[in-house]
Image 1 (cartoon, helix red, strand yellow):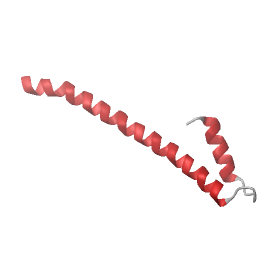
Image 2: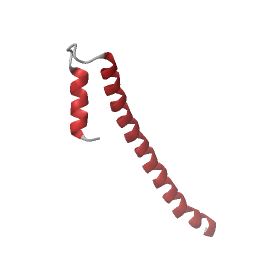
Image 3: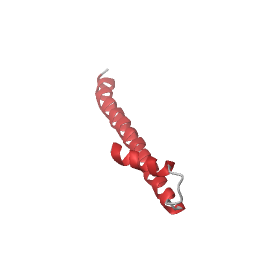
Image 4: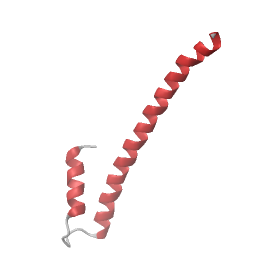
Length: 65
């Protein structure tokens, strides 16, 4: 996540002024959570890709073994 975006969103969430409506606060939370979900999903995709590579490497060895 872009650190500037993250900083601005956390700033928005931490402000206790009346300027921020509940809708704005919820929008900021949704954006932050979507970045976290994206990061988590990318991690899972990398693990699956690594697993596929390991399976491709080990499968021929098992067949010839």
